[in-house]
Image (tube, rainbow, N blue to C red):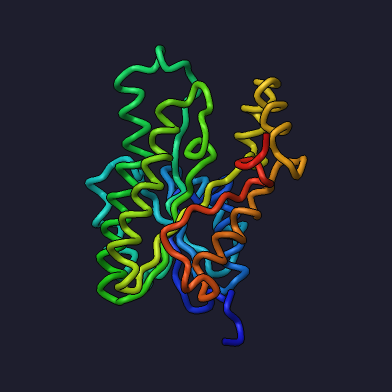
Length: 252
């Protein structure tokens, strides 16, 4: 095995790949030789992202929350690119609000995008991968699945559910050549996280104080971890959630 981390010749589908962590996962995958398809709701954002990413990058407009579109999306991408070798379930939403102020509709909306949609897409891509006898599926989880974070009841519930899904699917599919894993990002510097942290200095200080490495991560830190999990270097890794967090999950 000369290049165990290479993704040459593989097709990766990344939801929410036009911005933030998803964009940097796409960038790292391309640097490792993959063909990348990013999805999102806003075509103008996807077009700009693909133009920046360069050769090997493609996009498909898709709203993950509309589960009726999932099977059609997968069929179209397989027809166009020949296969989906890697799936990264990155798209997600959050809402910071005290639990007593979260309505049933608020809660259901976050569960639908962050968990129901992930299962729907993973199931449809999984059928394709199982038919080929190979594939790597990566879920983007969160520190909210590791410990209690106030004011994110719906988000934490969805991300905790993701890890349960990873374990079950890994148990069902790994023996058939399809590995399923998760990455749990710590506090990563993105435009969205900077806005959130700057608007809540107490939370920012608390996050930093329990991160032993003493600084927030970069989106590409998640990207390179995803490259590892997608590659042959991780052939014997399945059913796990890897914290990429500067030690935040074990900090005090």
